Length: 156
Ligand SMILES: Nc1ncnc2c1ncn2[C@@H]1O[C@H](COP(=O)(O)OP(=O)(O)O)[C@@H](O)[C@H]1O
Ligand SMILES: [Mg+2]
Image (cartoon, rainbow, N blue to C red; front, side, top):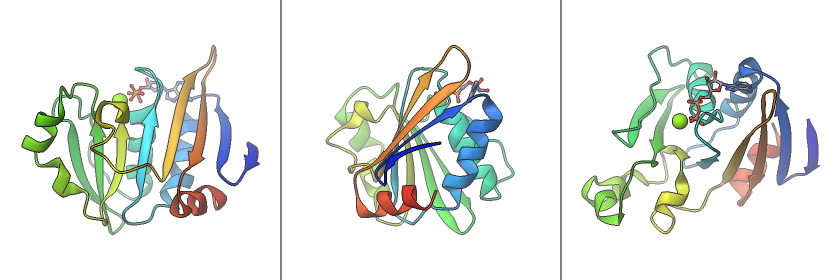
């Protein structure tokens, strides 16, 4: 692991199990209200990370990509979590019509794939993770934008 400072961490994930190991460590640092942006191309490992986090929190069900529903709600480890995939979201009207605004109640924890589709509609990220596809494996670059996010990365 390469630790530049408290607010930026870059880690190479040589295979899926490394992604799941990172997920396990992140799961231990989640706090209610936390917003985590997940950037990266299709297949970069965003959903894999969310699946790993939910499993680490004890969720035993299937974690499917919310490609068409845009959001999937979960309860695990005493936390309320929302997994968004906004790749197919069209416009602000769709966001409002779905009632997504009400989800941001300060208690739910958010994992948001393709947050760039809803900038201005979603809160700032506490932690933003960028997945890069390497010839072998992935690189995850994490940065924090808030005190909450910084505490999360510092304790990772
Ligand atoms: N560190 C890794 N190295 C290689 N393959 C990985 C790694 N992490 C995840 N994968 C694989 O890459 C794919 C990622 O898919 P997915 O998580 O659905 O991507 P995304 O949600 O970013 O589109 C899965 O097939 C998964 O097994
Ligand atoms: Mg995905």
